[in-house]
Image 1 (spheres, rainbow, N blue to C red):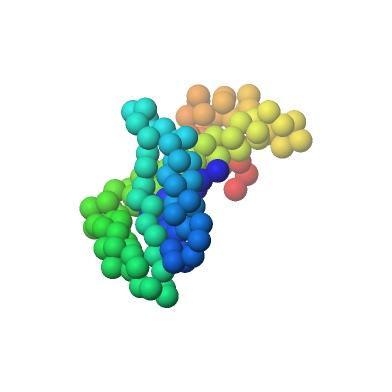
Image 2 (cartoon, rainbow, N blue to C red):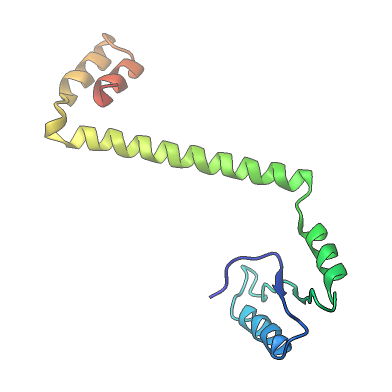
Length: 132
């Protein structure tokens, strides 16, 4: 199984078996397909600290893979939307649990009546349900 990666690096490129490892990683990527059905391949580089082979290419690939300011902003916006969604989902679950649980001691009919008569606001009704 492969993790989601922007770049794969085979170290010790000067050692026997390094080229085969690179081929195996490239082959394993072909098992993953993207939304459009195309293989989602990422670069698989080989480097050696002994011979210095591939160090420059690795440096260039890392620089290219780093997100620019726009993509960082977009990523932050997606995380924020996801967090808000998860928070809303959890709040809904807690309210539903309070309404269903007799042990919670919530008289839904009384709260609904008070809300319908205007005796309490929706915010006050919610506070009674979740008992802040």
